[in-house]
Length: 182
Image 1 (cartoon, rainbow, N blue to C red):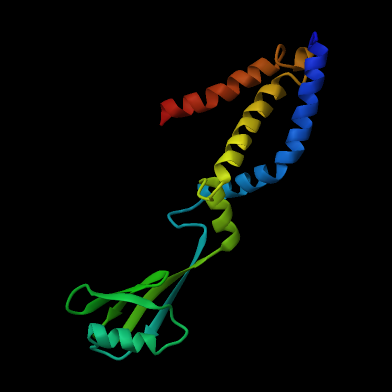
Image 2 (image 1 turned 45 degrees about the horizontal axis):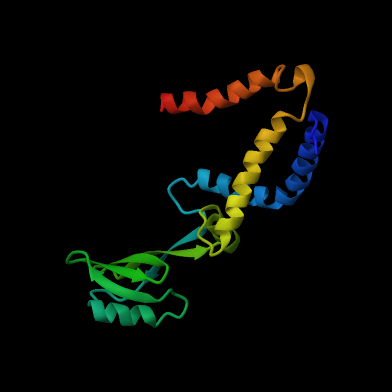
């Protein structure tokens, strides 16, 4: 069977279109996750941090501090209590951390709650979900195919042999220039 340029272009367009429709959902998920990860600002975007204060009795020992904390049903569980200095204890909480000041009985703590959707899509993005590697590889090769097949979608002076070559060169130059500037 002899393949003509017209037949190759036709099939490339068909595959590009149909595979593109198939990959839209994954592309949107990766795009959302990528955006969220790019704007972390020092915090994990998959978790919401709640900062709070609890008033307990003054001058509690580590054991008494743990007991006093556990009397509050609405607080996260304490895993360990560690001395910091003579006046402070660190509370290692289930999903957080706190500091007890014995002089006034105040506990400043933060608790991290998972944002289920963001947590899951970030796990997909980082390939931390079992069995996802094959799909992530297929998606990666689909993106490469989209990039290459897209080069040949338009013919003539607006295509790759016309002004398209200049856009392609600029697109290649941007990350190279950025790498040298950083």
